[in-house]
Image 1 (spheres, helix red, strand yellow):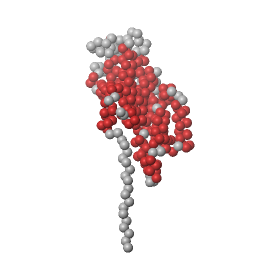
Image 2 (cartoon, one colour):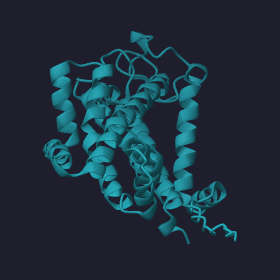
Image 3 (cartoon, one colour):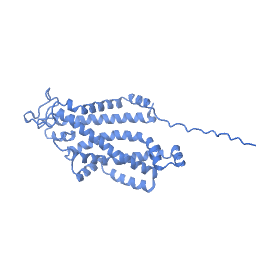
Length: 296
């Protein structure tokens, strides 16, 4: 007598629900504020990339006979105390400000994400030790912490970027940790642990992709915050050193002649305002597009 063995039907796990790219694009298009931020940021980045073609003069070229000229056809945004064209310096200064903002956000994101993943996943003493260090760093305002780091390392572009980036690590750590505490209780994480997946695979294959949405939004907003902090340090004389054009340093150069030639300081200040506003609006639009709970 032979016993027939019939295959046991197995149910496939339902596919993970993700927001398709067309839906994300439609959600961003339906958000006029986010779309406005994208347009502003695109125009600023395009003008920065074409600074060598758009700038009418050399940003370092000093002409004492043309100092403090008001805006005109020859100098659309006027000249500064040394006769340098303000428009040219603003365009070239955008390169440094955007570079510092992007690199500082990257320096803050990489260790912050890693610390948040490890702290939230393992918990226990690792979590307690990590979060106590982050709480200590958060006790200082970000600008004050960056100011202390620059004071120790000495002023300069690279040190300002490093200082602003290190000051942003606690925010990433806390955001990622809070998301990991929720995601690690999901069924697919328990199933991966039950079949013997290594912790590294669970962290980077199953948990990390599901906590990236708030990290992307935080990174976008952190770029704007980094630009503000770097400009503030340059305004205090601890950032980019003259005669290199940088928005914060340009505001400082026109501070004493604000009543006589307001365009020297107001022009870079307006550029900082527009850039940070565009980045923040884009961050809000990305949050609406990436979070399925906010979709209509």
